[in-house]
Image (tube, rainbow, N blue to C red):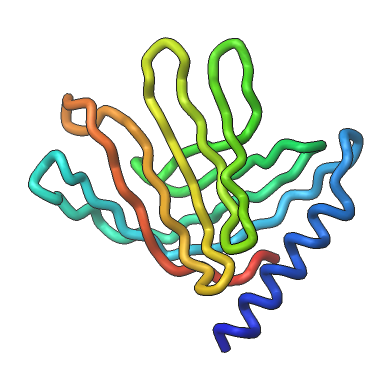
Length: 144
């Protein structure tokens, strides 16, 4: 079953690369079941949640957005602007993007392993009045 999911993810990535252009950007949605932890707060575990990762490619940029209940909302992309520095982390083994706010230094990153279709992500946020990093991980289903 894992081989089929890996093949489907690779085929989806190929389709994204073929059909991406500045005039056309299709959004692929990948449902995931994730759990978060805050290492700075004695590895505080957050309630597991269902999220959807939206995947878009526009030109040479990749856009990944995790949609779910707070604090499972984050954006990572390779686009650099006046406000953010972005980086494409996509390799032969995983798809990913990183984003850093130029003023605050807050970072976010989303990576999806192609072989296992497991998402690993982190985001810097304020939780219970403290600035912390939330680490997020969990299995996903193939994009639809």
